[in-house]
Length: 603
Image (cartoon, rainbow, N blue to C red):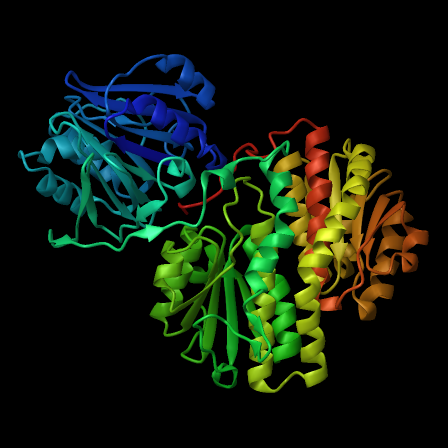
């Protein structure tokens, strides 16, 4: 959540900071601000609301060639000017931006209040510049270390000091931060797209490392105050990757990018000799259980993966919301493979689940999109989804590429364990190879129908998604897409559970989306569709055999013929488009839906 940008160089900092923050809007925020250093000290400008308000308040100021900026998502204190970042120290010699949560801020606030410090905000962040002022002894490195040692929780920090000319400072713990390397200028950002117009060369600081950033270079110190060399990472992203390319919204662009993203994800992992999972070496015969932990859409991908792995690899699979994983006292062992799925690789709850799994002796495999992210670094093994930058808050290609990796993983485990016949293995591999091309044609074909159906059903106040087996998993993702961008109340239910309470909600003109793609479950799902239709619901059916359900549906979305295990990919694309056009018809802020952030880096 939130966004950080920092700059030092020869150019005026203000326009660079504002541009960087605009490229981080997708992360979600409700206020913003910048702090710029000059010979006259540090000037801070902050504003509640969208960045447009901050642009109005800045104008041609502040002037200076070093600065830090922030977009805030309110956690401690209301979204207003006082609580917006950056925050000053009491003597205004320090300014700080912060992502994360300082868990012991009340204790530290009391400590500082007893020593004469007065606070102007309700935030946990304001204690950081106050601590810096309290501990400052003329040596910034020692001051930052003393402050860091007092902090409990998670943080990515950008620090500006009035006495240090063109320098500023950065450090992180459990929150994302990158350092961009330019020519005669250097940057920090919470995500690379913020500064891709200036550089593609980055340093990724590790936990509790401190970076001193000047126009002429970056020096990184480890937690023992030793200067260390950091490997330079060259991003394969470009600034153009974070542009809309003529699409009305990033979400629609990213829906259309899915075939290419899936192709990148699978193309060199399927070889004439079978599946090659990069450098990951799994012996499926030695694994006795798989645990999948994730949040949001990644959790729904894990649910689809559960059905696939259990069916073909014949391994028991547990799926957990990562936010609950630690608290149920999971039973893990060295023969358990824990799979952590995360688009950003920085999801706080998923990172905590990873650490818990490792603490309990489980091997951990990460499925992430962002290279060298925290989860990627801390896992024993990593498989990247290769989706490319995803700007819209509602994930699309991030989700379908996660499915693709889970299919490859499950099929390799099945091959290792001898639980899949050669015929079935070849059929699944063949279907995976043709998946990108089929998906490309399907998105083109279904787009107009999704637009038509959205125009017909967008006034709905409630929507219910039902299915059985992996169709229920697909329903979970479809409901999430609709609710998060259109603000329609949407829920997914296992179709067989309707009579256990949910059917009491169905009334005339309720909208139900019934997913029926599994041959052995089709008749049962059809009977559930009949139940809701008899109570007056309008039904959109989604099926690869549309003729089998058409008589009981008001409208039907026909999926292409493919291997039954892969139908969730096509279901996802259809429901993404439906949700997109419903949200457009209702006038929603599609790429930046209210109250949501792209990367949830706090619990």
